[in-house]
Length: 67
Image (cartoon, rainbow, N blue to C red; front, side, top):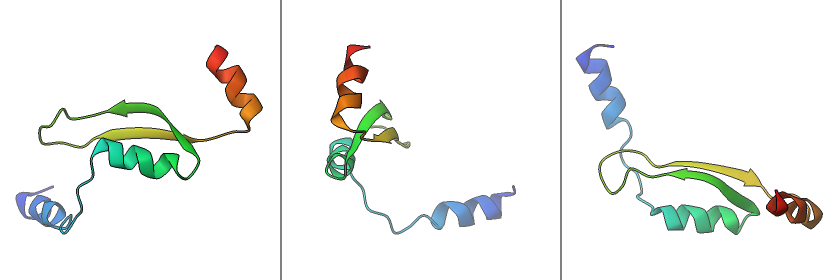
């Protein structure tokens, strides 16, 4: 892409709301998801990456935690 298209893509992300990793985690946990993986940008510029999985019945979790 050229500079102009990059600029349009970058500005197109505004406005946005900032959330801490804890806020994102709590939001999904309240909806029956559990966090499988998290990679943060360590407080610098960048994007945090989350992988959530929908919770399965309790019997599955009992077996999964033993592995």
